[in-house]
Image 1: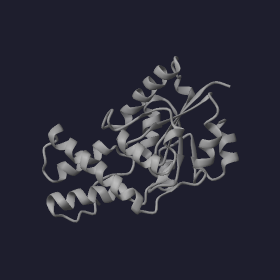
Image 2: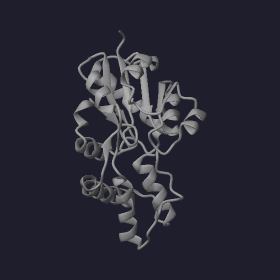
Image 3: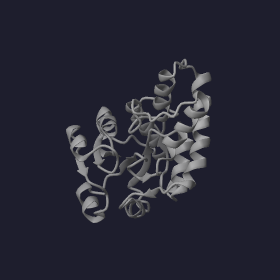
Length: 227
C-alpha cells in the first residue's frame, strides 16, 4: 500500500473549541480600542491567524508591521490559553477513532495543515489529547496565506520521511472552501466535512473530491478513502 500523507485542518474539522479563539480576539479589541466587535465583517473560518490579525488591524487603521502584528498574536495566544479550559469544546464525531486507527500505521502519515499558529495548534490539540497524534505540520507562522502552506507541509514530510510525496498520495481534510482551495492549489485530494460554519451545499460548490456531513461513519469513510 503506497504511503499517504494526511494533512488535517484543526478548527471545526478535528475539534471545536467552543469559540475560544474568537473570544480571545474580541478581548483584545475590547481592551485596546474599547469596542465590542462582533467581527461580522471579518472572515475567520478557514483563514490563518495571521490573515485574521491583518484584517482586524486594517479595520482599526493600524499599520501592518511586524511590530504591530506580533504583539497582537502574542495577546491572542495568551487569551486562547486562558479561555480553552473555560468553554465546552470537544473532539468532533469520528475523529478520535480515525486517528487511533491510523496512528500505528507507518504508511499513513498524520500531519497538520492549519491556519493556526503552531503554538495555538498545540494549545488546542493538547487540550483535547490529540497533539501527539501528528508528526509535524504547516502553520500560520509559515505564511499568512493558506494556499502557500501545502509547500511547507510537503517539505517537512520529505525531510522527515526521506522521499517526496506525490500529490496523488496527499489528502487535505478540512471544513471550509479555503481548505478545499488549498488542497487543489497544489493538486492534493480534497476531503471536506460539513462540521463547521460552511454548509454542505457551500462546500459542494468548491467541488471537493469527497464530502461528508461529519466523520462519524468511521468504517464507511475509511473504506471510501482507502485509509
